[in-house]
Image (tube, rainbow, N blue to C red):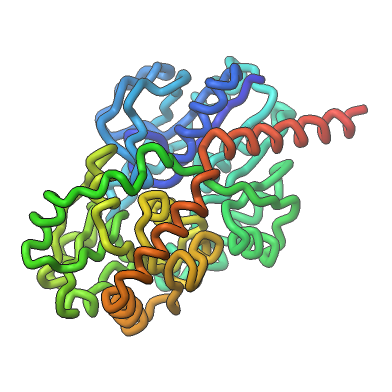
Length: 392
C-alpha cells in the first residue's frame, strides 16, 4: 500500500505528534508498505523538496526516535516558528504538498494531528479523490484556553471541519473520542499509542544515579515532558516542600526559567534522550504528570513500562492509562494540594508504591508499537473497503 502521511511535526521535533508519526512510518515500511512523509521544514533545513532523513540525536514523547535513518522519504514544506514558542514550526502555503501527493500516487492519505498543514493535505486529498484517515492528537482548544484565554470555539470549528471531512478519525483515548463526538465529529474510532517496553524497563534502575540525585536518600519524584504553560509543572511546588523528597524535572521549553524559581530544590536535568532517559525514568520512585490537556500522555505509559507508580490528573488520556488504586493515583486537574497529598501518600507507603509500579508494568507489556501499528493497518483496510463499496 502506498500511503502519504501529512504531519504537523516530524523529527527532529520533540513532541507526541512527531513521535507517533515516525513510529507509524517505521511500521508501514516494516510491513512492506510504501510511506511518504510530508512535514514542515525545520529550522535551518535545506530547500530540497525530497530527502531521506539522516539519523537524528533527539527524542520525542520520551523515546529515542532516531537510532536509525527515517524509514521513508520525507518532503519538507516551508515553515516559520510559532511566535512565542520557536520550537513549534507552522507550515506555510506551498505547492510542494500537492506535487508530492501526485508524485507518490498514494492509495490513502494519513493526516497526523491536522490543523494547518493537515488542513491543506485534506483539501488536496479531496481534490484528488483520495481516502483520508485523520489522527486526533492535540487538545488545541485547551491550548487556546491556556495561551490566549479564548479561542476554544474557533479551535473546535477548525478541528470539526477537518475531521468531519475525513473518511475516519482515530482518537488515542476514550476521553478524546468523547470530546470529538460531543463536538459533532462523526466516524470516530479509538486508536491508542504503543510503548517501547524493551527500552523502558524496571531493570534500568540505577542506584549510582539515585545517590547522585538524592544524596540524602530522598525519594525521587519525577516529571518528563515539555516545560510549557499548558503542562502546569508548577503544581509540583508543594511536593518540593515535602520532607525526604527530591523533585526531578526532565525536559525543556519556554517555562524553564520560571519553573526553576517556582520549584526550589528541584533537579532540572534538561532534555534527555534514549537509554539515558529510560535510565532516569526507571530510577524514579514515582512519576507525576501535571498537564490537564493530554489526549493520551505517552510519558505516563513509559513510566508504567519502567515499573514506576504514576500520579496524573483525572482528565483526558491518563483516565485510560492509570488504574486508580492499582497502578497509581488520579487527582483532580490543576489541584496542587491534591498532587502534594498523593506524593506524600506514596512516600509514606513504599510497599504500596512498589506494588503500583509492578502492576503498571504488567498493564502495558502488550502495548507494543508493532501491535498498535497493525491496528492502524486494519483501520486503513476498512476505509479502503468502504470507499470501494461506495464506488461500486
